[in-house]
Length: 145
Picture 1 (tube, one colour):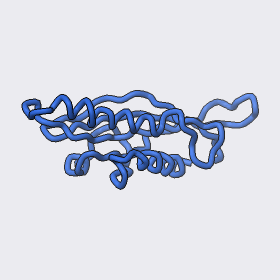
Picture 2 (spheres, one colour):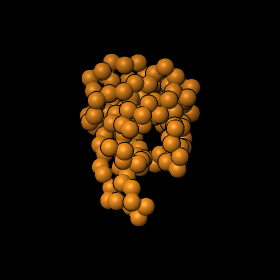
Picture 3 (cartoon, one colour):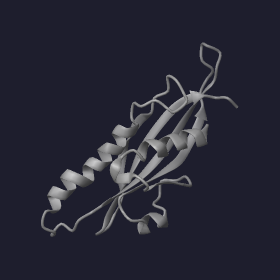
Picture 4 (cartoon, helix red, strand yellow):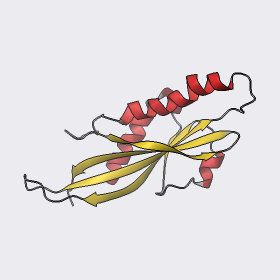
């Protein structure tokens, strides 16, 4: 289930034009991986965060809450660069929304009645050339183990 959900997320983010061919997976955590400091921006990494078994439901089945983080890297212009604010507002920040729109409220591939839920985002890294945001998503799936 973890791999299937991760593949679904990679596929969905790959539909964002600016991120086509620039989506990867990484091992868990919320810290910036050194690879992300070298990767050309924009980029996105899907990272399995955790899962937990939920109490048995009235239908007698058990479900599992599965959480993923995304590291989304965008280009950051120097504040003194002409057009800095225009680029940030018209290109870079809308990319974060495009990622959210590609996932939040969409169904999971090969599953019915499962929708991805957006849990928020935070800026976790910034330097003169890039900003990296972490976005959180979760889904509840049938525990088949």
